[in-house]
Each structure stands twice: as structure tokens, then as C-alpha cells.
Image (cartoon, rainbow, N blue to C red):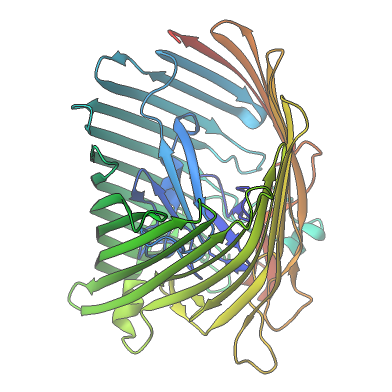
Length: 610
């Protein structure tokens, strides 16, 4: 969970994308009900028309934590640079182009047969940077059906400074992973003692993923601050997920196991030009314009399966989805920097195609506007207001099969608040109102999403950071959704499957006598799982994690992490649907994925040539 009101939980196993919930909406695996757009060095990670969910973010499993330099969050769809799946925010991850040490080796091990290795070389170059890194990991988890989650990631980067104005860079990210899963277990069976919390029904749940992405960028910086950036990428992935959500609801003999398959080739490029200029003697401005292109060629299918062996094809399609976009934004600063105004506009055009089934098109304009005003530099309080329209597309299969349905949903996001920073204390408070043109509901027959009806959510966020000493700081934040409901419904129908209260807090120690560490708390409230029965709720939780590290000698560090320090019993995700176990009648019940108990990992890091 980021310190930004984002609640994320594992849906099953470890190799599958997280389920993401934000601002009272369940985004599934990242791309529905507004979506959270995630990019890595300009390469979008949300996969459209994916075998397991629109906007699927499973490709993030190919990232190695040590190589992340920074993650920037935009709280809503306020930047015209980003389009599809950006309705509830954008996270842009920047990877390192080099490491501070020439050679780095990290070895870790701990609970549940867990081990992990990281090795990286970052040679010093006269006119650039280079990096090659490998990460390998394995864990069985606390499950009675061992997780057997193995992941291998390889990352390479090379950057060359052509001259003082131009830079050229290349990057490669490759990943292999495979895992088994206990799936989501029926919680009524756990409460009655007939099924262990870490038990399973189908021992063959799990999946395997292979992916590779090659990207490049070119950047030119002019003498007056102007900049031109061009980047492009090509990505190939193979995805197979084996799941059995309803157990024996439909087939008492073979079970309801399904295989979701996704094989795709992606290509794309981005170009952006920025130019600072003056509107007048007192007003400075920045103009930004750019274009995006993203192409997806997808072989997507759904099969019935038993013991990971396909039995029959349920549905399949050769899909082709392209997205072209252009945008522009002007920002101006005046009154000695006390007033900042910006306005932007973006247009996205989509082409949805299914082989032998036809083509459909869709497009949307997305306006953006922002204001920030500081009444006086002597009183460091800034008032701000933001508006942005974001979009999220439907699955191409639904677009072709139901041309009468909306193809693109919109999210109108309004935010206003104030921030204060003085000395050791920083505080911000924001109020938000979110109007969505269409919610998205899951269609299990073909593993797609269809649009439902308009919805609204509103609430507030509060964040604070206080430096207790030069080495010790405390921070915290909470997001409270006052309401989330479908508009024009009588009696009112509520949006479900997401918490309305998300909180985080942290105590951080930095470089005190060789020690660094943090104590982190994350919490959510219980939340509704059924829009017609308020008694069907998912349980909330409060979890505490600890991480410490210490320099032993020059070039050698020790680390210890303890997740779920208080060993709390909780479930990362919970969903409400109908299922059946052998010898039982079909029943609607809550199914959950258990959170890990107390988990300890120790590690040693060796550094050479720092």
C-alpha cells in the first residue's frame, strides 16, 4: 500500500497481480472502475483486453525492488500526459540507470522456505551509465498446498551522453515466474473448522508468466530550458492462469477449473516537447505538448481445465487494440510564484478489433485544469484546486459483441484543499468528488467486464509528516470515503467491494549509529460486499511491519524485516459469490485470501567499488 490511500491485496498465490482498491472503488487488478495507471520509464503496464482482467497489472512482478529510483503519484487524472486507465490516479515508476556500487550482492532467507538473491554490476563509464542485474526468489508461503512461487528477473540498462545536450538510453527487462495457489477459500468453512485458513480446495490453482520488454529513449535539452523526449518500446508476454473460483458449482465431476490464457505483442512510442517562456514581465509559463501511440496484438482465451489440462475452449479471440493520442498543457506562474494556473486538453482515439468479427472505434476529449494560490509567503499555506477527466476502455470482446454499449467510461475528478509546510511539519488536507459515467461489472462466462451505470463517491484525505529529530520522523495519512453509490437509484444502491477508510502511519529512523529502519502501520475498515444486503461485509484489519538494517563493516550490511509483527489473522482480499463444495448445496458465501502470519526475512548485502 502506497502512502496515498491505495489499498492493495493479493488475490491468490503470489505471482498474480494485486487487487487494488481506491477512493471507494474496486479497480480489480488495476484497470476497471476508473483505473490506476502505472508506468515504468514511460512504458504503460496496464494490459487492455487481458485474459484475467481489463487493465491487468501483473507485469509489475518483473520489477526488482533495488532498481526502483522513485515512484511519483498523481492523485487523479490531472495530467494530460496520461490517458486510458488514469481515472483514479497515475503512478510513474523510474528505474535506476546505475547503482552507487560497482558490484552488489544480496542474499536473503527466512520463513516458509523463502530465499532470495540479487546480484548487480554497474561499471563506471566515461560518457554514460550501465547496469545489469539479476533477481531470483522462491517461497512456499504458509499454505498447506505449498506456493512454490519461483521468480527470475533480468534487467539491463545502458545510457550514453552523446554530448552536453543529448542522451540516448536502452533498457531490457525479462521475467519468468511460476506458482501454485490455494485460491480464495470459503470463509464459512474456515469458521466451522472444516477448512484451515491456509487450506485449499483445488490444488492445481496457480499460473505461469513469461515476459520481455525492450525500450529506448532519446532526450535533447536546449540552451533555453526546452526539452524534446522520444521513447519507444516493444514487449512480448505469455500468461496462463489456472483458477477454480466456484469449485463444483457447475460440474460435480471435473470441477469448475478454468485456464485464462493471454499471449500478446505490444509496441508503442511517446514524444514530448516542453518549452519554458514568459507571458509577460511578471508571468512565467511552461508549455508541454506530446503524442502517444500504443498497439496491442492479443491472443486471448478461456478454457475449462482439470489438473491444468485444457478440456474445452469456452471462448477465444484474436484481438487487436490500438490507441493514438495527443495532448497539450500550459502552466503559468505569477505574483512572485504565489499563483499558479494550468489548463490542458487530451484526445484519445481507440480502435477495437476482433479477427473475423469486425472493427469499432471510440474516442474521448479529456480537459484538465488546476489552480494553486499562496496568499502570503510569510504564512506558508497554499490553497489548491484540481479538475481532470480520465477514461477507461472496455474489453475489445465486449465492444465487438455489444456495439450498442458504451466503449469508454469517463471519470470526472474534482479535488480542493490546502497544504502547509513550516520547519519540521508538513500537513495537507484534500476534499474530493468523483463522478463516473459507468461502473464495470464482471461477466464470468467470458471473463470480461461490461459497463453498468453512473456512480459518485466523495470524501477527504489528510496527510502529515513531522521530523521529531534530524534522524527520526513520523508520518501518517488517511483517506475517508463518506459515500460511494450508483446515481439515480431508488432505493439507493451502493458501490461495494472497497473499504471506505484507508490509513497508514510510519516511524522512520535514518542513519543513527549505523542503524536505519522503519515501523509501518496499515489499516482498512470493514466494507460491504453485496449491494442489496448490508450485513454481508468484508472484515477490516490493522497490520504492523518492521524493517531494520545496519552497516556491519564497510561493504557489508545486515537487514531484518518482520511482516505482520503482531501476528494478526486477517484476509488480504474478500469477495462474495456463489460456490459449492462436494456434498453441499450451492451457496452464496464470502471467499478470502489469507494474509501472511508473522514472517521474518534476514539478509546480507555485499558491496564493492562504492
